[in-house]
Image (cartoon, rainbow, N blue to C red; front, side):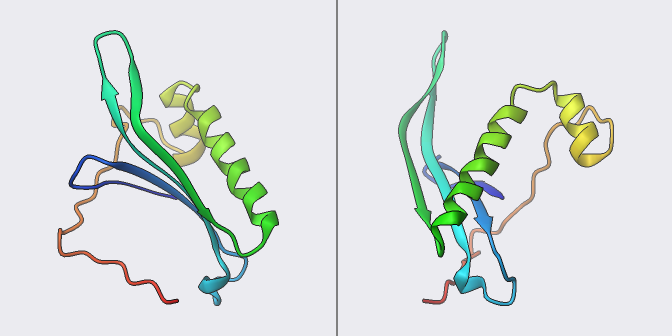
Length: 109
């Protein structure tokens, strides 16, 4: 799973599934992207989209299952989620990494 924000403030979350790491071209992905708007009384998506590419239709079920699981985690208290998934108790709830603007991802067709 990868999450990033583009220069135009578009936020993207991508979930990947690979049956065989030696054959990444046979992998599948599910991606949600959009821009959110925060007002005084609510937060909503101004623009939103879901894209996917699957090598096998069964992968789509796996990818949506992971997405459903992650949505369920959002309802957990942060401390419980960190304890289960990071095996630590922490007050620091985010990990940020710097990615240079020159970073490019090359995909083979």
